[in-house]
Amino acid sequence: MTSFDRLTARLRDLSPRSVDLLVVAVVAWFTGLDAWSNEPEYRQADWFTWLLLAVSLLALVWRRRWPVAVAVVTGAACAGWALYGHIGELLNLPVIVALYTVAVQGDRRRTVRTGLIASLTSGAVALWVGNDVVNPQGLAVLEMLWPLVPLLLGEAVRTRRQLQAEYVARAARAEEDREREAARRVHEERVRIARELHDVVAHTVAAMTVQAGVALDAFDVKPEVARAAMRQVRAAGKEAVRELRATVTVLRETEGEPVEPAPGLERLAELVDRFAGGDVEITLRQEGEPDGVSSVVGLAAYRIVQEALTNVVKHSGARHAAVAVVRGDGGLMVEVVDDGPPSPSPAGGGFGLAGMRERAAAAGGTIDYGPVPGGGFRVRAELPARGGDGGERS
Image (cartoon, helix red, strand yellow):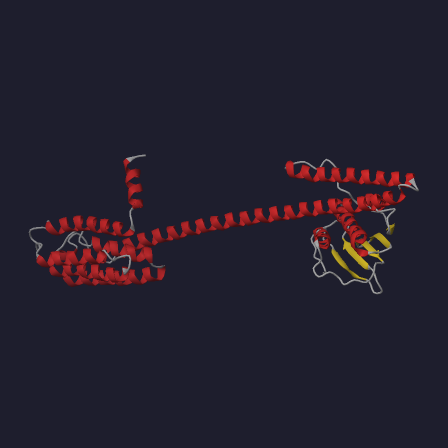
């Protein structure tokens, strides 16, 4: 780091008041030297010259708080020197600093007004006292230009600071947007994983419970039925392990697909068979070819049927349940109806109903559920064939 860089760093560490006092000291040094050394044929410095200098320096101390008032005071002192007959190249340094402060701390409108007044005043003073006193080397019109220089400099600095502040604010907003987007994606991923785990675990436990009950009832009288039920329990457990492994693989690997394909319409019959043999008789009706149905929609339909059957087995008290999956021109209709005793529609629903709503919405479809007149409960989902953005009716 060079000496200039170290000096600049130290100046930046100073407080505003310390900077103001330093500016006053520098202005006092150069203006005082100019006031003290004057041409012999012109008026020499006296008590009035030093009084005007003292007033100007004292006013500069408050230039940040009252910039316009300080510009008026220092401008009057500069005009007083000229009218008094005392000339100097640096006697206008206090008003230059004041005009710069007016521009750098104000706005463009104030800068224009100040520049107009300062320029006209400087020109009027030059015409009043004559070129020989105010500006021996030029015309009076030049005196109208010099007040514009610090104003233009202050305007440029203020504009640059505003642009920098805008760039910083824009970068901060962009960073906040990125953080919000990252948080949103993390939240969506957590919800998706929680939904997958709920579907896998809840369904598997319900299916295993049904088959274990069948095996327990048939253990002594029908050993073959009990063995078949236990084989279903083992198969359901293996299937749950495979699906959990696929979900965990997604978490551990940022790239690549799960090791197991996501379940879809082709596995609905297998899903229904897991509940077979229990207290609920379940039938499956599939119409239309599943060609053109995306994997997202197929997975959503599978999970909706899975959750609906789990609720039927665990909560409905039904004896029969019917699953219908119809592929039509408009998309895919999925419906699960049971004949359980009348019950009010759950307010808001539990995790299972919320998961079905999220599944349908993620696939771009809609879902309705509620009690059926005369008893029972129905879940009906309308899904597009290819998936997409959509809303839900619930």
